[in-house]
Length: 78
Image (cartoon, rainbow, N blue to C red):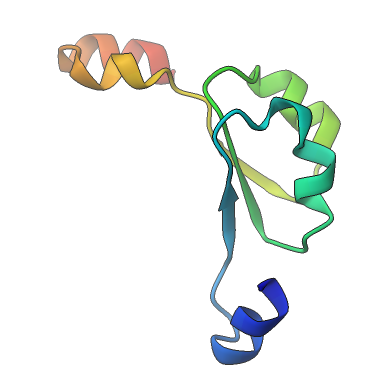
């Protein structure tokens, strides 16, 4: 799938997210995507350590915070 999308849309960064991905990070990296979206249950520092610095990571915010007031969301993200 990644190869096909890269061929059809060259230069577009590809992001891969799998819900509950804590046990799959290393395998996700092997897909060749540009960014791994971390599930909110994966510690950001642990995810970065396991994936290394050659791939971007995003996410890791508890979805329950999306219903919180803006200051609480900001604090959680920071």
